[in-house]
Amino acid sequence: MRKTVAIVDDDPAALAALGGLVDALGYRPLCFADPADVLASDQLRSVDVLVADIRLRDFSGIVLHRRLRALGLDVPTILVTAYPDEATSRRALRSGFHGYLAKPVVPEELLACLRRATGQGGPT
Image (tube, rainbow, N blue to C red; front, side):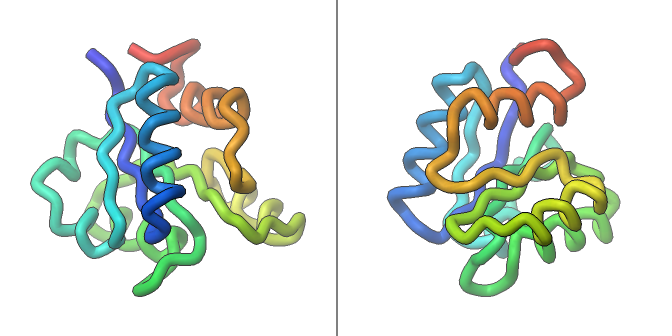
């Protein structure tokens, strides 16, 4: 059974691209344009990894990760951004995020993060 990756990005093109990439890498994508929809999803408990844009309309991928933890869901999270910077990357990785990737996402980098986040050598 494929691991489930929830993807949150308010840019429709980026969301579609990430969803297609996650699927091509062998994982099951669940795509959301709004972080509130993730929190309301009945599939939330089946999510193995979260890939979230840092800059979202209502609240950031970082805030979404914190809200999931407050709900008792410690979902490994990979952050993506169109505005990467070293200081934010270092803070995110030190804070326990499983990746900090610049858009457009490099497939091999995403795969490495997904493998690390699921604790596996590859998707299953």
